[in-house]
Length: 127
Image (tube, rainbow, N blue to C red; front, side, top):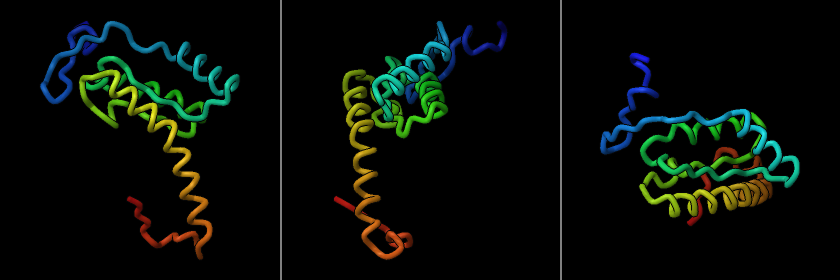
């Protein structure tokens, strides 16, 4: 329809490229798949890398919203981590982040708990 960004395309990305959304994410199917991954396999962290998200990240944000509503502890979006054209590199980075971030957060909580007030008012930096 008139004024509809799905029908007309939408300016997005650093190059002001135009995208045309042919189909919105199926939230019902997405919720079903994520719920199964969580319930059947114990998945608590999700990596999201959609083909053109370097240009148009709205659909990755939909996946993030659904995953967080289902209680996933961590959601890594390739468009936030490495907003570049190469899908495999973005996906690889998102997978590493989805795997390691919960482990590192757990380690840091454990480390901080050994100090008075869990270092609540002290900045903590690692290299």
